[in-house]
Amino acid sequence: MFFSIIIPLYNRPQEIKELLETLTLQTYSNFEVLVIEDGSVNDAEAIVNTFTDKLNLRYFKKQNEGQGFTRNFGFERAKGDYFVIFDSDCLIPPAYLQIVNESLTANYLDAYGGPDGAHDSFTPTQKAISYSMTSPFTTGGIRGNKKGIGQFHPRSFNMGVSRQAWEKAGGFIITRLGEDIEYSIRIHSLGFKIGLIPDAIVYHKRRTNFYQFYKQLHFFGRARINISTFFPQELKLVHFFPAAFTLGVMLTIILNIFSSVLAPIGNFILLIFTLLIFFHAWWKNKSLKIAFLSIVAAFTQLIAYGLGFIQDFWKRKVLSRS
Image 1 (cartoon, rainbow, N blue to C red):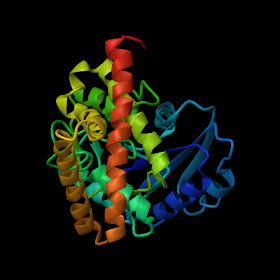
Image 2: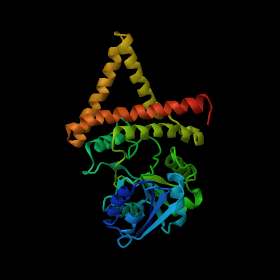
Image 3: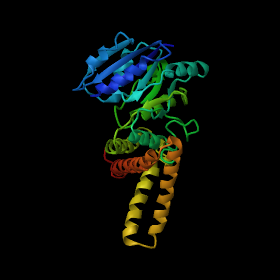
Image 4: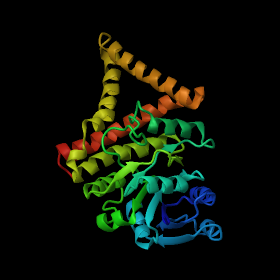
C-alpha cells in the first residue's frame, strides 16, 4: 500500500522539522509526504527543503483557509492509495506505518484513527495535558480506547482515509470547529467501515502551557455544538458532562460563600474527583509533579470545554443564532 501523508502547517517551522525527522525513521518506506503551508507568515520552506533528499516530499503554499480545507488541498494532489493526516505538533514512532499497513491488510478499514500519548521528551506540563486528554476520568478514554462508548470517530491529529472513501465522501466541508468529527460521521453514514488501530500511536504535543490548553479546549466545546448543526443526533448526554461539571464547580464555590450546610457535599465530590485524577496520573506517569499538574490539566480541560459548550449551546440552540 502506498500512503500519502498530509500535513497542514501554519506558522510552525520548528514543529514540522521535528515531525519530518521522525518520518525519516519509518521502517515502512512506501509513502510520500505533502506539507501544505496554509498562508503562514513564518513559513518553513527552508526547513522542509533540507528533507527533500531524505523523503519523497512535496511542499506547497496557499492562502489561509484553515486546516480542514488545507487537508482537502492535499487530498486533491496526493498519489497514494491511502491518505494519512497528522497535525504538525506530532512525533511519529518508527513503526507507525508498518503497524497501519499490517492492520489494514489483516482487517481493512476505510478510515481509521489512532491514539496519542506523551513522548519522553515532553515537559511535565505537556505530559499532564496528554494524561488529561486520555484519562478515563475526563474524556472516558474515548479518544483512543477500543472499549470507548459508541461509534469511534477518528481525530485529525492521527487519522487515515482511503482514496475510495475520499472519492465518495469528498473532503472536509468545514475547516474548523469539529471538522474531523463531522468528516468521520459523514464517511460512516455512507456505509464505510471506520475503526481504531490501537497500536498506531503518535506523540501529540498539544499545548505547552495551560493558557493555550484552555483556549484550545474552549474551542473544542464550541465545536461539539457546531457538529450538532450537521448531525443533531450526535449531541449525546455524555457531551453535556463537562458543562455539568463546570456548573457544579461554580455552584460549589457559591455554596461555600453562602451556605455552610450544603457546601460540604460539593466539596466532597470535588475532593474525590481530584484524588482519582492524582493517584491515577501518578500511577500512569510515576511522577508526583505530573500527578499534581494533571489535576490542573483536568480542571482546565473540563471547565474550558464546558464553558465553550455552554456558550454556543445558549447562542445556537436556545437563541437560535448562527
